[in-house]
Amino acid sequence: MAPDQPSFLEATPAWSALKEFTRARIALGRTGVSLPTNELLEFRLAHARARDAVHEALDIETLTQGLVHMGFDPTAVSSRAENREHYLLRPDLGRRLSDISIRTLEESIRQARLSPGAIAFVVADGLSARAVQTHALPTLKALQALGSPLDNSAVVVATQARVALGDEIGEVLGAEIVVVLIGERPGLSAPDSMGVYMTWHPRVGRNDSERNCISNIRPEGLSYAGAAQKLAWLIAQARVLGKTGVDLKEASEYETDTIRIKK
Image (cartoon, rainbow, N blue to C red):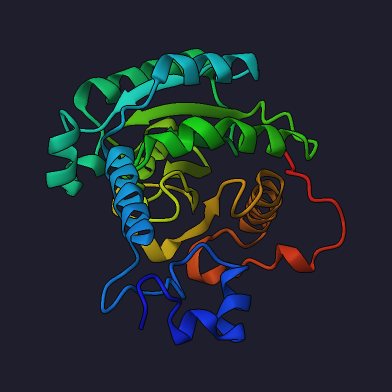
């Protein structure tokens, strides 16, 4: 086979058609028994971007300013992981609040005076701070656009955070529901994908099976409006059923009426 000549798989119409609908690395061709140089370089670049996303720090000040402009009064907390290296090596520490963060939240409760049925929104760096830095505010704005002012809610910005950190945050705040917007594990085609995890009556020790997840929120994946629509539907149904997770099957695409979050 001549150098850089497309392989049989790449030239097959079926593979070409599939390639139009996915960013997955299919039908790359080959040079001899190896990948073409351009494809190999693209792979290495994607891998470097994924690694950078994991280590990139959340710009708390910019994020907080954006939340304030939306009408929120965010509180900043951190997990027990002291730094990024600690966070990556000890996932368990990313699931629990630092002592000073617990005291900070307890003070915020006295000031906010949340009423029963409050929702705690946690904007967490997770494994891709870039994801929440880019997509958290547009998603929350899309949720507001559905008709709910979200005035009976608390907003917390969390660093060195795992999903389960939201359980302790929600428990300390006494929230009915916790919604964690968090950076997902970067992939080779998506270093900035954000996920949303929702848990009814959050408390330390909740299992992943007790949560609902909306994933791949980004312009190339699930749109902000689409994510907000799903989240609003899940919040409304969680309040009807009194539960989330495997007992709450997401079916918002079958709803034709505009979804609003009831206060």
